Length: 213
Image (cartoon, helix red, strand yellow):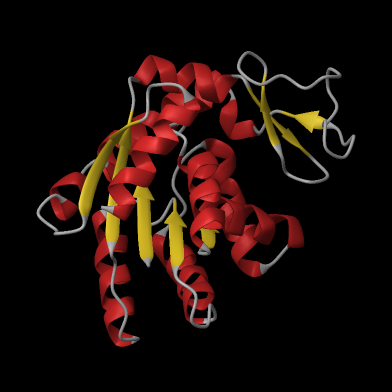
């Protein structure tokens, strides 16, 4: 099974997508993680992407598309779950063309949505472990020891793109560039929507339902 999850920043694509991919035996391909790894490794793609990520704006298509195709085509026989790609109609068209070249297709495209204020609260409270990448939330899932990861003891930090001023810019960019994906995908047979404003377990149950049926 090949899936795409899309929606605004903070809607839960990463958390829910990772869990779903593990349960379904799919490769979880999170564009943000791929890009951040490239930045950390100092690759040419990473150097180009860093300035865009730090300011909360979208990384250009020509940087993203090559990374994603490389990961998808190197995935062997396993299905995949794309989290954070495509982010605009041009990327969606490029994804469709890429999959067609490799004799592949999307089984489900799931739009996750939630009120904007809820998204701001989620993102501005998020903390990430520098060592293992596990995420916490100051309000909803705080660490047992302030500033330290429950899993590995690593230092927790707030990403630059989770500051409230950058979040506002990210949501603005989302409305302009990513929301048009709704019109692009809405008539596809595999298109589904999930209300992601509720409790985490309830959202996951709804997501699993639309993916499996």
